Image 1: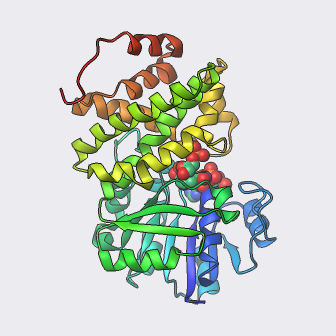
Image 2: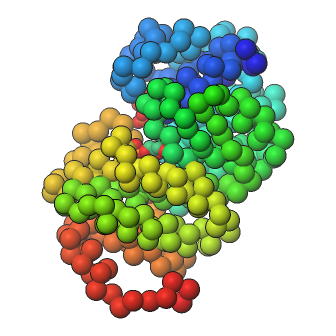
Length: 342
Ligand SMILES: NC(=O)C1=CN([C@@H]2O[C@H](COP(=O)(O)OP(=O)(O)OC[C@H]3O[C@@H](n4cnc5c(N)ncnc54)[C@H](OP(=O)(O)O)[C@@H]3O)[C@@H](O)[C@H]2O)C=CC1
Ligand SMILES: O=C(CO)COP(=O)(O)O
């Protein structure tokens, strides 16, 4: 094994699948969880709650406290991966700031897997982590791209982007994450990678709604191509590189989640098309549907920054103001044609 110990924060579907990737390169991978059930499941070799049917190697172990992490790692960790969803980052970082700093003091990378925009502060994950770990900003990195958790553990070839500020640390983290089936491509365009990962979830919900209403291939292709145009407009405001949006974390993930049956955001959209209420679906779903809150964040960002984003604002009206999705689509179709550059 090339490396000794990796620590993954949160044992959801994606955190567990990345723990599986890391188990190919690390002697030991510890997943820190907060519930006894998930702790027991992981230690029995299968996360039946979040990744049922996927066997985990016995080098992956769970821990519930920092004392347990210390005992299992002897206080030495080579990499931390945060599998926390958007809604948990602030809570987790506030409660665990000092413990995390003890590890970050060793100079190791911390890679976040979250895809979203906080609907209250309108912050992307980098701002949320930097609020606690500004002095460690060169160690903070963000992974995003087309990567269904289940397919990773099935060893499907998967290529993602890994964004950060420090090129040497990025290359080291890419090596730690690299296997014959999983590859992270380094980039310094943090905003581009994070916006791509967050905004594609919104388009995936819109795609699910249209599919649920009976629209097919033509409509999906229209949504993907117009969706990326609107995503690029957000990118311009944040100073992101346009080419990032045509890579794994933009177009790649947009295609995956608008076409892939495993997407929770797309499935959520399909349920909305059946006439169910958004809050009711969210309450009944254990797994996170990041695009729901991100739709609200994108709407407020578009309003605040003057971004022309009809799909994003249209979806906001559907999810938060009960507008009829068919009517929203009709209104978009009858708008007078406009040159994109105008
Ligand atoms: N699943 C996928 O295929 C992919 C997911 N992602 C992104 O990764 C992020 C995580 O997604 P995913 O793993 O799928 O989500 P899941 O819904 O599968 O799991 C969420 C995890 O976060 C934990 N959690 C929630 N709130 C807190 C908190 N306050 N403190 C500590 N832990 C908490 C949950 O713990 P508990 O069980 O105790 O509630 C659970 O382990 C999301 O931003 C998602 O968009 C990115 C690419 C692919
Ligand atoms: O981001 C993902 C794959 O890249 C997972 O998408 P969902 O959250 O829609 O399942």
